[in-house]
Each structure stands twice: as C-alpha cells, then as structure tokens.
Amino acid sequence: MRWQLGRRSTNVEDQRGTRVSAPVVGGGIGAVLISVVVLLLGGDPSVIWEQDRTSNDNPVAESPQSTGSKAQDQMADFVSVVLADTEDTWSELFRQNGQTYVQPKLVLYSDAVQSACGFTRSVVGPFYCPRDRKVYIDLSFYRDLKTQYQAPGDFAQAYVIAHEVGHHVQNLLGISEKVGLLQNKASQTQANQLSVRLELQADCFAGVWAHHAQRSRQILERGDIEEALNAASSIGDDRLQEQARGYAVPESFTHGSSSQRVRWFKQGIQTGDTQQCNTFGKTNI
Image 1 (cartoon, rainbow, N blue to C red):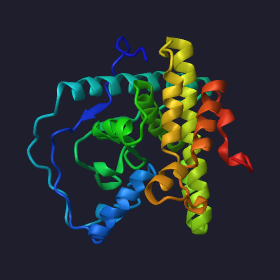
Image 2: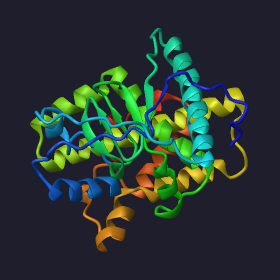
Image 3: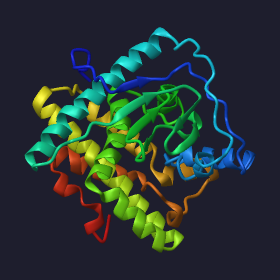
C-alpha cells in the first residue's frame, strides 16, 4: 500500500502510555471472559462494559508511560494516514449528496481505555463508540491480526480502520440508531441478524473507501486487495467459532460468515457506490 506520502490526520488522539485503573466490574472474571469471546467475534465492547459507564467507581488515569517502540510509532503514523484518507473520501461522498461529513476522532491507547461507551480493555480489539464518535485501537491488535488471524499486510490493517469508520458513517446517517431500536424489540436471534447486516454494511463501506481512494490517489499495490479480503475472511464468525470450539452456530453470528464479509467488501470496492451497500434491503445476504 502506498501510504508514506499521504496526508496525516489531525484527528488522532494519542493516549498510549496512559494507564487507566479498572472500576469494580459486577460481572467479575465472567465479564472478562465474555470480552474474550467478543474479541473473537470482532464485537462492540460497549455492550459488555455498559455497566461500567454508570458505575460509581470511576476509572483513574495514572501517569503516562513510554509510548512504545519505533515500530509502533511508525504504525501510529500509518494509522494517521489511513484515517486522513477516509476523511478525504467520505467528505467528498457526503458533499456529492448535499451533506456534511463530520470527521471522527481516532484514539490510540494501550491496555485499556475509558470512552463514552464505558471502560474497555484492549482484548476487545478495535471498536467505534457512537456516543463520542471516536474509533479506538490498541496498536498491538495489528500484531494479533498478523499472528493470531493470519492476516498480515498493511492494507489488511487499513481495512480494519476503514471498517470502524464505516460504523461512523452509519452513525452519521442514522442507520445505527434505527437498527438499535429494532434490536430492542427483537428476539436475540433477530437482534443478531440485524447486527450481522450492520457489520456487513460497514464492510461494504470499507470497500467503497478503498474504491475511491484507489481511483483518486492510486494507493493500492499488487496483492493489497487480497490482503484485505484475507482479513475479512479471517474474522468471519464461522471461522472464529470453529477455531474456538470446533463448530459454528449461525444463529449466534453477529458479524457475518467469512464468505459474507468477503462478498460485501468486494461489493463496495467494485462499485464504489454506497447505494449498493444496502444489506438491509436484501432477503439473502
């Protein structure tokens, strides 16, 4: 991926090295174990740590430590460039539709972080918090993406950011709120199905970003698309569940199967059209 000459975003908040003391969690070790499962599914941590947001025991920030290695500093630079590229792409797409794109903030943190969605440990992985319109990522996740999920490559890493920014786009368009209201009235299985559609749409939006970034700025190199497709496939619910327990339970999927995630990312990158990302308007996704 050709990123070194790209613009750096001014919307990165570097909180690495700032240690946050955890509040008392009602669920104890059970909540932590659930977080591990959510990590395997690429889930939103706000659901698990919701009780922490309203807890009377507020997290306490301790004195900052070292921000990390030179490699992590280079990765932080990379993240800033990818975020800037998503800003340029979505600002233009929103402008074409007579709308204004409100840029999200991206928070770099280590180990744990306090967001408007609650106290969250890095084990949960990258996430987007709609309450404060921020993307959160511990850069150590990229090591896991390469080693644990066998999805190496800089464009695979860019896909992760673009997916979370896709959730921000959904938030701005009011899609996330509508889905949340429907989920509150649905059964658990139906709520899971709605979650899958929301996640697949974010995958498609990530593809839309890649399409326009390539068309406008020629960022892709040979093998980049394959890297992103591999990443999308590696974090499919079916593959993660099979790795974790030997079998998959489709009714419990919250992000979609490997084939679904690949399909919708392809849909976005091939068409570059957000109108082609309507996962809610199709009976078969």
